[in-house]
Image 1 (cartoon, rainbow, N blue to C red):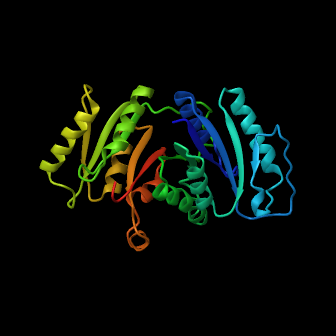
Image 2 (tube, rainbow, N blue to C red):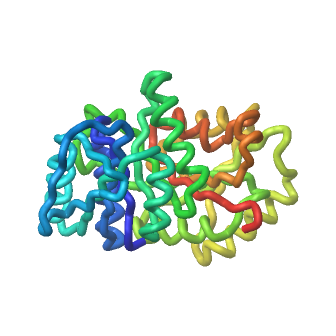
Image 3 (cartoon, rainbow, N blue to C red):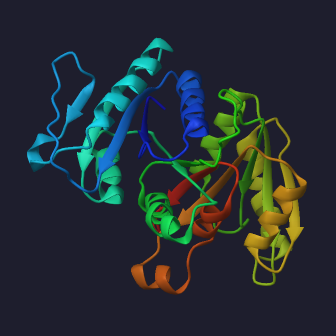
Length: 287
């Protein structure tokens, strides 16, 4: 995990978001691409020198809000003092499309962004849809951290307990292998969470999947928590209310436009309500 794309609008509370970014950067010796997307152009000229860590996208003949280049430079300077390489990208356009395009062009290993689960419905429609769209479509993992952290003290984030949600039927091994490696790096406790509902797989197939997870875990015994609940969302909510966790890992499958409208994904519903960070892996239908 060499390059992390840290997307920020600089308006939300971002203490936890930046702390998660720092944590991953130090653990994996990663560098940052600090991206701000300006969606409404205004008439302000921005200048940069060769020494500035700012890459201004001049091909679109746009300008950015006056204060943002300074704020982003300050962040880049601060990260540099902490030993984290950081380059600032200023872009204009649709936030979702710009973030996804930048991630692909720069071949990033992780997208990290914030989301406020306590935001108003209007804010949810704007920022929540961006986080969800990124999680659904990104080719690389996406870490979405709650931003309602006014009382949070910097440096208090750490994945002591990682919960990996699984249907025990449709998962693909690559994300789990990466999460096992992550848990090893952070010396975290890794637990599998399976929510059993009426339409979930039977016990025989679930036991086979658990055996496969055990093979991937190696010598460490796999820990599985099973919860019976009317819905997967209510089961996860109940589990997290009784079993504190620091990071929730979910996979989301490729969906067509109509399916997304008629049946919003489980991952999307959890993103809109979770009070802990969610790490999302997007699975291709033919992967």
